[in-house]
Image (cartoon, rainbow, N blue to C red; front, side, top):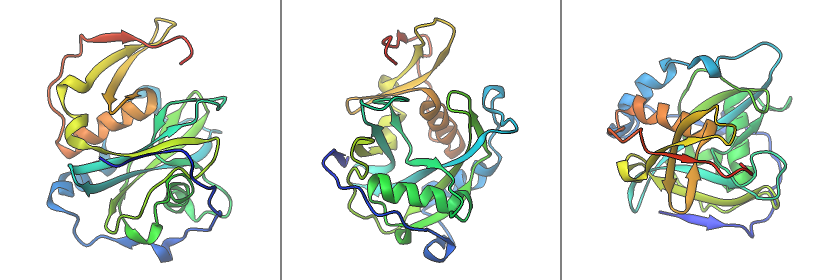
Length: 231
């Protein structure tokens, strides 16, 4: 697995349009089921979009690394005011100059992790999700990393680490658990992989992705841990 911590330089913002993306005529065989099922995955009630929320997009980027099929995650800097230290998909708000969610997701992946948009084949978009904590309507954009580029944290003070996490590790029952918020009112899925605890919105979306691709395996959902108060 490729994992790169801080020290990267902030990258110049660029307008990413459809001219630098490619529609994959056929993804690798292991992605075929996901590409078919992704656009119609169910949206849980807690993530159903509401009017007035700000539009955003994230990139679910699949690749093939030395440890097999993987997905790209970032880890947010511990100094941020919101979601500090949390793993996440590359992404952010859709800006006026973006040509929709696909362009925004690719631009953010370039700025945050160094992913060259020209090396990504867009597979599909998933249904829009509402992220209540930040009041955003998030469109997940799925892509195949046809030509992987060198990755490194791009935004000083925002991204602490970028990592290619093997799908095999994500579905390993030993790496799965449920987490309970300090309020005691919320339970959600989580992944403990490569020194990261992936939880919250990212873990919920990852679970949906693994289900859609047919990769998920049974795991012990009675294994529950409390989140630290600062999370």
